[in-house]
Image 1 (cartoon, rainbow, N blue to C red):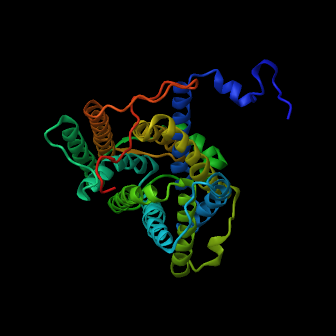
Image 2: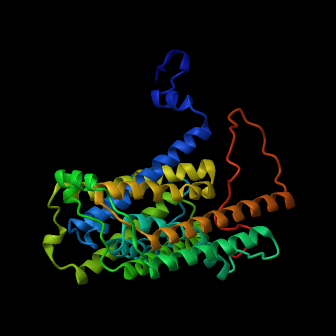
Image 3: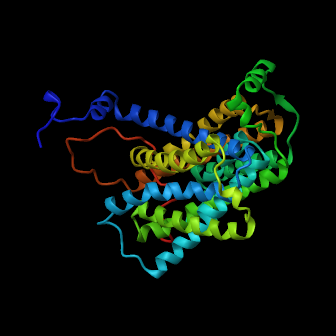
Length: 386
């Protein structure tokens, strides 16, 4: 095939545009776009619940779209690295779907329905700390209280627990309400008015559900680690879980959602919310996140999580007229401090291990590019239990 592009030797327009930016800049731009995408998911999901969409139907459609999107990529891109499927793998995928999809997404929607998008996003910042705690309890992660990295992770986890407790047990007075002019704009806009508001129903119960969501998410991260060592085809791994998650939600719907009318998409706003959740939040964002983890490491990706909370707060204030409460703000600050303490501890642990066991230098290549200094797994690989 003849090359197009003259002096650029067949490079596509996208490749030439990306070539204008260093890889580090590309990585930060991708992470910002990712946080905006996930922030939009929080707001869109709450708007869908406000419009009356079923908490069972919504995740079914979301996972169907994600499954359809992932399946061809998993099938064609992982033909060579995908191990043969066995009954043992299927059982593990099924139970991982119970934790990582059905419980995770179910608790999230129940919590979001009773609180607000901003505080749902804020509590999610505790996931790295909860993951560390679970890994330590299961002896996957070693806790070294005689080193500053170990103390930092422990105190960071305590800060996250304290923050989640404050959000759950103390709502406090309203410290911010949208201005009257902004409320007037919402009332005049048929689209924004149709989204409803973000007033909670049972704040404490919603926060308990969100803690269940974070526990499910962290449990899924811990439990998937040994499975991925034996089954490294990540796209196929995720596709199987999406498939089992769909089946599990359909079984739940048979008992909890018997109204056939609930399965119908009534408005364009409902259709957009389902499309956004399935294609943007579960499909495109998943692909961008994989690329960011490969280039910058999972800890670098986690550092951007608080940006998502800030973006959600701005979006929810405009689109849903969300109010902010003192307890939620204090709890969110505690959780974000705890998040960065855990991530700092992980980075210091990596430096300590590199000094103790310096890696052999890789052979030089023509395509060497600067890499992030925070490239490490969220779970320690030094322990043979994983």
